[in-house]
Amino acid sequence: MQYQKTVILKDGTPCVLRGATEKDAAEVLQCFSLTHVETDFLLTYPEENSFTEADEAKFLKAREESDNEIEICAFVDGKLTGTAGIEAINDSKYILVMAKIKSYIHIALLLCIGLALGSCTKWNYHDGGVAYGVHDCSMWDYFKKQPRDWDSTRVMIQHAGLQDLFEGKGEYGQITFLAPSNLAIMTYMFNNNFRRVNEIPAAECRRLLEKLIIPQRILTSDVPRGSRSEATGEKTGGKTYTLMDGSEAFLWTFQESYLGVGNAGAVHLWFFIEKFATSRRIYSSNIQTENGVVQALGHDFLFE
Image (tube, rainbow, N blue to C red):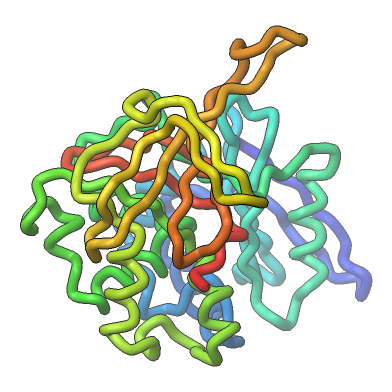
């Protein structure tokens, strides 16, 4: 998407806002690295970023050619001072705004985000990509292609010694991953006084992840309708699966009504694992890769 506008900041300084192009890749990547060392508890740190300059150029080129997505750069005195990305979700009714800005020019951030006013943000949603969420790559490579949602997840997987499993080289040919996002991992770190994923003991990372991996491929359509009472724990329908750590997960689907007609609306996937005490909903389902399925948890997911 193309965009360019010059605005005047409160101190009278002109600021040029324009859509980034692939030629801006080096500066945008440098801006990312600079902003991600300014404080703790960000979604990612520079060492967690897997993007190369070539990857960034490809990403920016796609944004430049898109009809409904854009990466906006803010320039002051010819220097890049911040970026804000606007990403469409499905039919572009919703947008997701991601901002990266150097600490000394906060006003430009507000200007970039202001471009999104009047739209909604569906913060618990994971964009599974195009083509109905089918990706012709391993689960590991899918996570690598979606760093804004999954780069901390990748670091946790790698730190736990489970990368081969997600590359499709492990003991199991197919897996289903009840996948925690960057925000869920960041919340865990904050609650446990860790500043970086690699500070979490490797054994603990493995324990947390094995509780969320089912060693077989499961789509929503494979799971029967069912329910679980939060008050009594009584289960009906659904299906019980064995997790990688040997414990069990109870999965079920629930179909909403539509225009007052029962069982005519959207189908949602739910699960219950004893460790987490309460039932959890999958927020983005059936993200398919060559070696398994990602069933993405909401950003509000808590490990403990």
